[in-house]
Amino acid sequence: MPQVKKEDIRLAILEASHALFLEKGYVDTTMVQIAKRAGISHANIYSYFTAKLQVFFCVYDTWFKARITALESEVMSAHGPHARMRALLAGLLVDTPRLDNGFSHNLVQALSTVAPGDPYDPSLLQWFRERLSAMLAACAPSLARDGVRRARLIDMLVLTFDGCLINYHVNPASLPDVAMLEEYVAAFLSTEPAESAIASQGAESVTASGTTATA
Image (cartoon, rainbow, N blue to C red; front, side):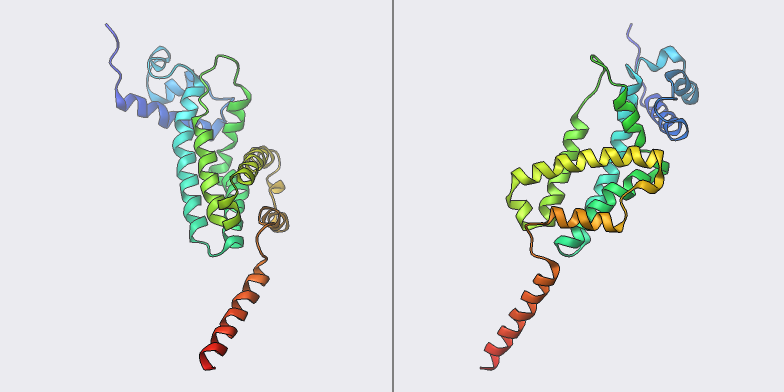
């Protein structure tokens, strides 16, 4: 007779896993430790998850989506292309690697152990790319129009994000500083007018409007 799965046990496994990944990291956490922390037998844990990789992505999926959703709010609340791009790049490349004592580094550890036949599901990566695409499109009209360039920038961001996760784990001081972030902003918005030009155009428009109104 097949074993009936209980939601409270599944949640206990995920809570225990999250705590252990925070304490020990993905590599040094074992399924035996997870089962013991969750208060179940080692054999029983495999009734709920086939491998540690599957457990990790269930935990990380929830954590990461909450983080990126919060970042989207930060980006959208900023005003103007440059402010939005700064919010996106700083939030992704500096703040996220630091969050929860560098919790995202577990992703790098987990992916480095994936072998052929392991239960790796790329759906979270696809979701991440879609959210990045939406945020980039919201940052600048030129990026909203140019899907090809937006896709290239997404590739750059994903690779840079992975590198920042590793760098923070090895040397927390190595994350991009303000000057580097500004270089990124300038490069990503190279087809957008500079903020000074936008301000100048706005001033000229107001002057021209005022002249016309009094003529």
